Image (cartoon, rainbow, N blue to C red; front, side):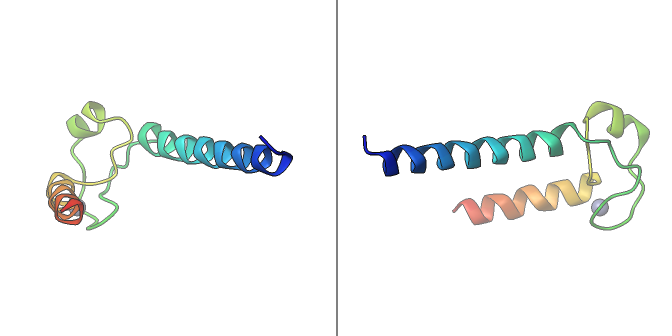
Length: 72
Ligand SMILES: [Zn+2]
């Protein structure tokens, strides 16, 4: 492994780590009382059930459908 390759590998590793931390931050963030997308209130039961929840049921479902569409 050359010095350049080692540096590139180190940069890639740190980017991966930063991305992972970013994702974890989202997953464990404070639950919102109001949907981020449509502004509807998110029921307290849902906030407790899903730590860091940001979307109401309708928007979450829409997002999942959207995600599946993009996956294809
Ligand atoms: Zn919503």
